[in-house]
Image (cartoon, rainbow, N blue to C red; front, side):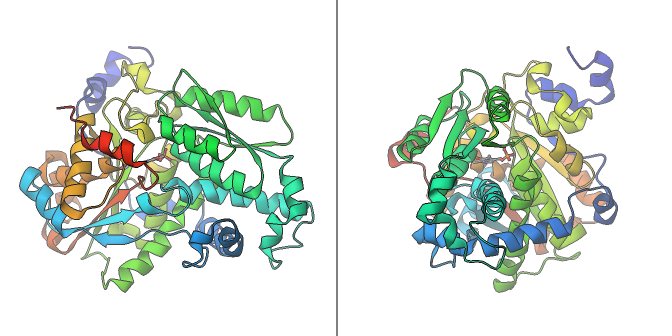
Length: 444
Ligand SMILES: *Cc1c(COP(=O)(O)O)cnc(C)c1O
């Protein structure tokens, strides 16, 4: 079929399961120790530290634009929360593995209400800082960054254009942040994007262009239009190192949160992290950041919908961004709008290849069930896409390939001392009427 031959499917049987839209638990055969993996990676620890410093420099600007961030000193960070009642409920319903289940609540990040508040806002700030220094709005890193939103600067930024292609949440983060600085902003939205996300952006003065096609098409058109205009900057989710390092900063902050909770992560107390994946930037950046901080003590897994497992397909076939889910006959269509991506980031896939432990896929009905499980047990709302993360602890217990992984890495008898982080990637901005629609959605 298309790019892959029957021989490819015979050689790598998981490709058949992917093609047949089965739920899979894939263990990455190229996974290796982090010292080796890191040597092959061209994003460095210094790049992540640089991003962290930039976010600190920009904190006064963030506070000026978004007063709700004042309490946190202009640092956009989310809570890490133990969810024992959910753990009990999931355990009773599906069986989940031992250890302590934690929820990383990027669903509640300030400004954008999703994980995109990390990468997206970071990239807008980085570009803004570059322009502001070049134009003499600020004299350098030591200057007062609130000058960036002075009336004179606003005039300057109003002539600049920021563009992005998005399934929804990235557009919201880039759009909201760009509008706050004063840029003209255009968001190219794929057909999967939810109406309320488009409405919210338009209410902030952002231009939303809608596409009949999928995310890849929205990105392609946006990139082309931006390239034709010297005053336009395109946030390129399929290739951006800036987004990636913006996401990676999360891990050092997570370390501090774990320290504050008295939770140790080391060889005898392993951490497992479950990261919902679209194009790969967010889970890739976070996964890489976690490895930098916790090394071989952390094992991270991506989670994708059975109809849009683009990163898994790219990795398992070795073709990365040279293949899309439609090439194996999948639709790319899923209720998990934030994960509705048909072709993965090639850049991220290559970085992930030696360090990602594996991937899970899940059917759409589960995301609503898991969302309700969390709501009922802990009274926390997250959007269905991000509830995909709970496939992690469930497959960890139930999938035979995972049992082999645990055995191979000597983890079987360490599970009772392990922690499991489900990365909740979005939800806080979802309007009440959409929440009640979700609550009533049963696909099975
Ligand atoms: C964007 C998004 C993801 C995944 O991020 P990618 O960078 O596209 O892989 C996960 N969950 C939600 C809710 C998202 O909006």
